[in-house]
Length: 55
Image (cartoon, rainbow, N blue to C red; front, side, top):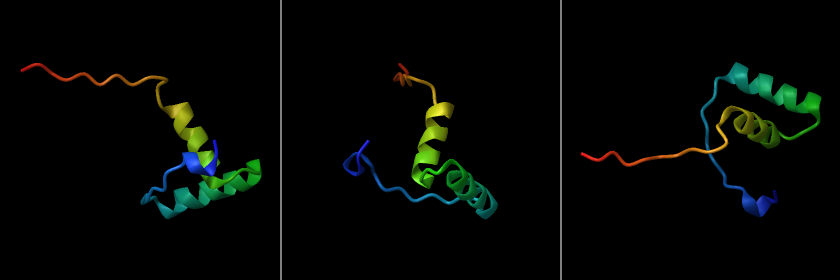
């Protein structure tokens, strides 16, 4: 994924959680962005289906 494929977001995180994530990214020698992307890919289902409810 190139920089052009990314979108900037603003998140509000617990400072201790952010510190932990930054430290883990350093340990793994990856960016914080890459760490968060890996975590989201592992957490999210492969496919999400949203259906409109018929009333």
